[in-house]
Structure formats: C-alpha cells, structure tokens
Length: 420
Image 1 (cartoon, rainbow, N blue to C red):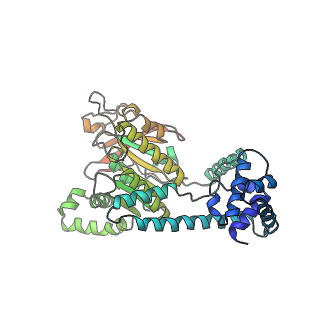
Image 2 (cartoon, rainbow, N blue to C red; image 1 turned 180 degrees about the vertical axis):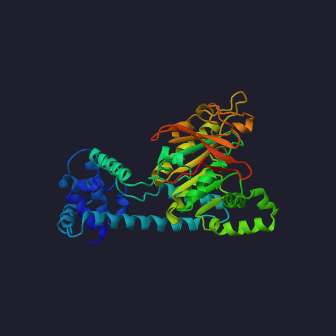
Image 3 (cartoon, rainbow, N blue to C red; image 1 turned 60 degrees about the vertical axis):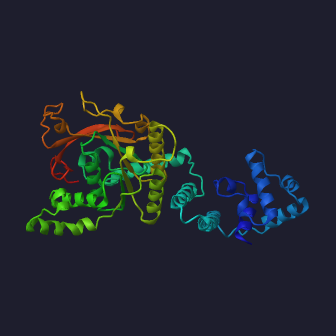
C-alpha cells in the first residue's frame, strides 16, 4: 500500500491516531478523490464530537457503495509491523517535501527584478511552515516530569544551564541566558548598552554560533571593538591605523582568536520581516544559539500603525520567535531621557509599555559618571564603574551589581576575578 493509504487505514482503524497528527494532515495529502472524500467526512465526524460511523461516512461521499468497500479494504490492508510514530514521521517528511517543491515552483514564477517581493514571500513561507507535525500539548504528569528533570540537572551539574554571559553575577541571577527568553538591554544614549551586549556576544560566540544584527554599526566597526576587547587597544586607533610596532604585533596576535569567533554579523537588514527570516534560516543552517538585535527603535516594519503599536508588535513577534526556536533573543532598547533623574526605570522604556510585558528579563546599563555624578546611591565611587540592574526577571527575580567600565575600550568587566 502507498504511504497515504497506510495512514488512512490507520486513521479509520484508530481515531486516536488522528488527534496525534496536529494540523499537518488534510484532504490535500491524499491523491485518490474517494480517499479525499472519506477523510473529509471522517474528520468532520470526529471534530463534531461523534464516534466514527463507517456507514455514515460512506453515505456522505460521492460514491457510497465504492466508499464502503474502499474503507473495508483500507482497514484490512494495514501493515501493523510499521510503528505509528515511524509512519507519522514518514508522512510528515513527505508533506514537507511537497510543500518545499511547491514553494520552489512558485518562487520561479516571481519577478526576479522585485527582490523585496521575493524576500517577503520567502519570509511568509518560513513563518507559516510547520516543521513539527505533532501537538505540543502535554499532560501535567509530563510537565511535572520535565521540571523534575531540570531540578535534577541543576543539582548534578556545576555548570550553567544557559549561555555564559561572561559576567559572574549576571550568570548567578539567570543561571545563564535561557532558551525561549526575550532579554531587553536598555539605557539612555552613551550608557554602553551596545558594548555590554557585544561583551556578552563575544563570550558566547567562543562556544556557539551567535547572530548579531546591528542597525547602527558596520561589521568592520563591531569587529574592531572585539579586537580592542581582546588586545586592549583602543578601537579608534585600530580603525585609523594609529598603532606603533608593538601594538601592531599585539593586534595580530589576538586577531586569530577573534577570527575564530562564531559570531555572525548583519549590518544591513533593518526590517523585522527580514530579520526574523534571517534568524530562522541561520537557526536551521548554522545552528545559532542566540540572537542579538541593536536596537529596537531602529527596526523597521511595513505596518501602518503608530510607533507604539509597531514597537509592541516587534517585541511580541520576537518573544514568540525566541520561544519557538528555544533560543534567547537579546533586544537593545532606548530609554526616554530624564534630565532631573537619569536613574533607569521600567516606565521609561521608549515608545511602548508593552516592551516590559513581552520581556522575560529587563537589564538596565547605568553609568552615573557620564552625568557627572560621583557616587552611587550606596556612596561608592562611580569612576570607571557601571551599575547593571535586572529590573525584571520573570523566572529569575531582580537584582543589581557593579562592573568595571573601560571607556577607551568601551569594555565592561567583572570587578574582581572569579572562577566557576
């Protein structure tokens, strides 16, 4: 029997199989017109809450007598040596291949001189493409089992469960950046949020592929900063070539380690549709484990709505993407200025209160030294230091800690050495 006939026989024999197929199976999967009809009325009966009545199904088709014989033939010819999970996996593979072949044919019909239309079509296809085929609903028994496994893992593993940020106190609060989380890093202009994110990106990309979208800096400027972080030579000097012989040797020495970084940089895609498509493609092809977007207010959208609605839509889509791909997505954001009190607050997230709502973690970068303030609220000196504030932690709680800030290198570091 064909794969589709084998599946239909299983469905007719056991309606539990239908409810394990998610939304992947519909009439279009079957090629025989009578099989299409049988499946359509079989599905309708199940979704209406009634039991499966083969006589009713056959009577509703365009050829009742043939349908009844066909149903009997399908059920009697089922090959039970093929496990149901194996059968479904083969079915889903066939469906995906059909979708991709149809997509390939349709792309060829598009006008090659209209690349934006082609990219939009590709993004829509990837967004709507169902790669699983199975229901993600779980019983409470399964959910409790998942949590117990996490607890056991955390007890028996000294290392982090998430991505190492390079900042020990941030790691302690978050246990590393977790898959599925949307992390907002916010601050006023010149507070160092880009540098803070780059420090994390450089650390993470030593171990895994990381995707960085920069709406402000060119890839060469970002790379120069990473070289500056490693070699401890001012990035402006690197780009202008104002290096003596010793500094040149030092840069060359560290260039190999920076070159081996698994950071992937995009400095051209500012449209949210293209950014999301890029993340999906790189997750599938390069296995990226984290994405960083710098920054929210510069990301474009085709929606003709208010700025607040656009920002809300972007953050919501990125949160859903993080959850779907099970990777952390870090999104940088501006804060509204406050001349009287520059200390960051959640209420100052620019353009939308829904940024806070969508975020799992909100981190503020605060350098009072920039404003001429000489002491933090606890009386400690602000010179060459910054305060990192976790203002929201949906699963982690909140907290605050200090780090060093090297203005010449735009580099943040822990205040003292620490070994995990």
